[in-house]
Length: 429
Image (cartoon, rainbow, N blue to C red; front, top):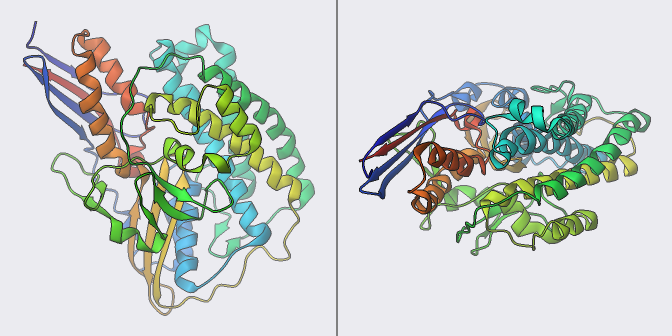
């Protein structure tokens, strides 16, 4: 039958709520729209008139999964505006708390959101009936990441210990020892995760993407670096607005971000991995190769392996930081606010997160701009579906819907950030 209509009210296992509309006419795909219909959240407006010191705590409320990313982009942007440099052990602690966020966010996605697609379950609860050990490993990995965030950030959700200039309180080295013991287990579990995800079946689907990520000369990127791509982009974070622009589309409350003159681009673990493979630790590189990955991966379905590789890296990096840690004399450096504009971009688990703030002489915020990763990936997700769906048009509607959902979940979209997500409608005529 060539003409029929399929309607699925909610796509599960994504952060937030939205919808996908797919139209098929005479067995040809004629329309794809990724609709984000939840109302705008107005955080940029909330920030106006607030003191600079409030930005990390306010922006942390944007997301319960990646609050550290919002705090890190905010503090770096403010420090850029005020000419402040945070280095040494305070900088290392920022990498450590970011490791915690990557571990907990990636473990949640790999085991609870994405794995059921590959194993044929509707959710992780159903999967747990047949694979209890897998689900337990995922939960324990997530817990290990949460413990880092809670310890350094003051609490797991919307942490409160991060400030412009550093932290409100920093730990003694002995206080980090229990974390190290947990991380040694987590590193072994992460290695097993890489091995396990490599055994999953992946659709044959590769595209000519433009990957964009931070690139630091000596580190796998968390907080710093230039913005680079595999197609020639190489700019400082300060020049972000010269190369990227957000567009409004009538069917989405989240803006679509594109590279000026080129269009869609791809941010997140796959972009980081492809642009920074040689900055991964030797253990992580070896694990990636053993899992069958080369230094470049263009199949978004294999992002579940790459996320597992990044969990392993984050565990390894966290242990390195703890081993080399010495308590700094002060928990923060002095900050003197001034009028200016500051720019910050860090690597949230789902990709680059850009903040820009303008302040007056007293450090009061007069303008704010925040571009989350999911907004930046929206157009690429739609492009994927335009290429992916035609290969599966003959599938029954239910199976086609599941394939579309899986293709979207490759990106771990966080509509809570972008402003929320997802119902799926397939229309066949």
